[in-house]
Amino acid sequence: MPRRNLVPFALLGVLGVLTLLLALLGASSAPSGATLSVQNASTRTFGSPTGSNSFAMDIVSTLSGGSATGTLTQVRQVGYVPPDRMAVYQVVGTRTKLLAVLNQSAITCAFSAYTAIVGGSVPWTGSGATTYTRTESLADYTGRIPRTSSASCTPQATSVQGQVHEKAVIRSGYLVGVRVTVDVPAQRLGNGQQEAHEAEGQALVLLQINGVAVRNLGS
Image 1 (cartoon, rainbow, N blue to C red):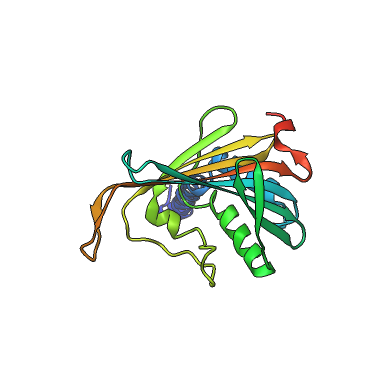
Image 2 (image 1 turned 45 degrees about the horizontal axis):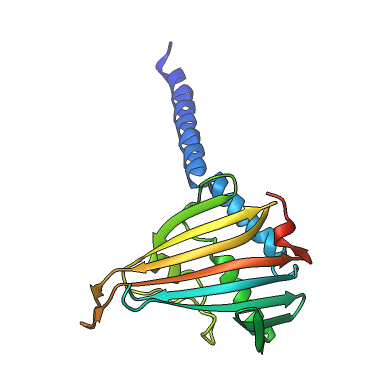
């Protein structure tokens, strides 16, 4: 075969290899099935567009500095009715006390924080039929979650070393619970200050979605 006829076949071979590499790269960068399940469930819970579903949920915050200091627990309840009514209550036992009714900018910031929890580059892994887990660095987590206490509602990544363990629960395609546990080991900070071991947790527990009690949802 004349040498000039080999060139088109060589080009086709190179193009075939490039196509295969691009396909493999696309497959490796695509979200996993478990990650899509968690993110789609979050969208179904908070609505599309975000904020189009009503809901009620408890936000349970815990803080522990070690066995000697015990664990502090705070429970707040959030009730949302679209398009612009979000109220926050303090929960003590079976009683609730109204703390605030949020304005539109605060509502937008709160939704940004709720939906950002399941985001990020670390994939979720299925752990049972309805449970998903993952672990990421504290820097990655804080660099993604907007600070609702900040007027700018922007993430502020921390330089403190630590890990964030996350657990999501899905029921009937809805995200009905997310638990975040932050584990900060004892360490010396950049300013020379000694940081003691600390464990902080936060759980979002959905009670009602679009008027339907979560306990009545199927598996």
